[in-house]
Image (cartoon, rainbow, N blue to C red; front, side, top):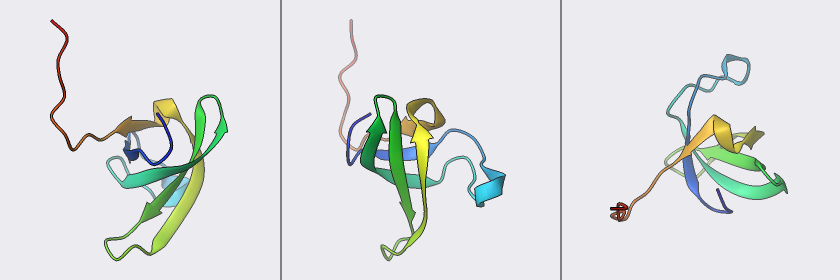
Length: 69
């Protein structure tokens, strides 16, 4: 994962009111495998921001990905 990657939660975080599949953006790298992820609505208003490990999210891809042979 790298800065400004668009990600989705891989599991629910009920303490924070977030559910699997919610989309966020990596906005800061806090440690080698830990990122500050901002969650915002469709108008751009942030409703949550939290430190997450790379294992807590899945990177979303908008472009066609090449598959290894």
